[in-house]
Image 1 (cartoon, rainbow, N blue to C red):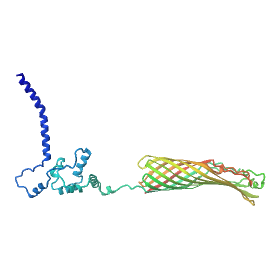
Image 2 (image 1 turned 135 degrees about the horizontal axis):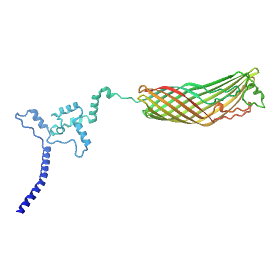
Image 3 (image 1 turned 60 degrees about the vertical axis):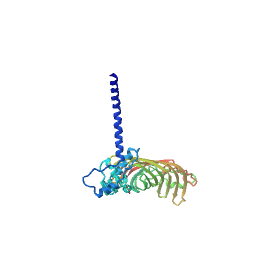
Image 4 (image 1 turned 45 degrees about the vertical axis):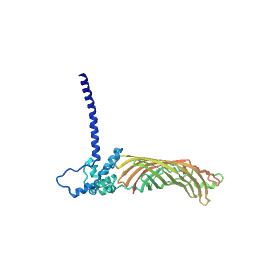
Length: 428
């Protein structure tokens, strides 16, 4: 009896373990049969029409799947999207050319009875084309075809009001100094060409900045020149004069050719060539009942070299931004100068010298910008610009007024140029 009970218990355990395995094998076999054998149409009480008979005859006996085992989920979804198509017109056209209408579910889409001919699959647009069609239908032709053109050229005009500081003590007359140099107005013209939206070549011209100052001394005055013991006739024309008239003029022009890299709307940097033409002229005229005399002193600087800078912006709103710019330049200065003396009824005396000097420039700009449109900007700034290694009038020494008087040009002066600017820039 105990042996019979043990056999029953062991048999029940074996059957419980084998039952799930048998059910899995049965389900798998049924699925294989369903995929291998074409489905049969449902029985109908009425005889089939010729159209249904032709449709059934044209159906293949076995469905060939358009995808292979081992595809990734991304590729599987792409194939499903291509099969169903995003464009309803393409879907209807493909369904009409293949006979039966495609069903909406995924299982029915890949059913053997809804397989599409190879011709319709070849002519069907791909996924990107279908998405593009949907975007065009949603946005309309005006939105889909519109785009912001890349800039090709830029034009800029900038007014500058700059003051040249220093040299307030320039004078060769005991009547007094000339005082500070005033302010002058000039313009900066800039034209640029974009090789691509992030790079621009530009040419800029600044000038002409002309600073002038003068003074008139009517009381009896004398000059600060050094007399010559060997030629006393040169000196009396500037001594104990009834009137002294002084004048000092400085002129500056600048030419730039830069390559600018525009990282974004908030920053850019540039590197290029810069030529600066700067010169000064000083004159002292002496009037006296016994005669008159004229002293002239001039210096010229031609700077040529490299310059570079960095410009950064901080937006305050969608249209307004504040920023700054730093500029550094290194030049070779081809400088020359001379002084001459002309006395009434006497021969002209002239001395000159020239020298090559290394010069440098340092600039700092505080800037503001307002954007009217994507092509039009208004901007303003306050600029500080220092030039070192220059030959200026007040830095020269005039020797005794004699034929053999020496003259050595000095090129170790520096001065600051500063002032406000404003202008417009047009990009097209």
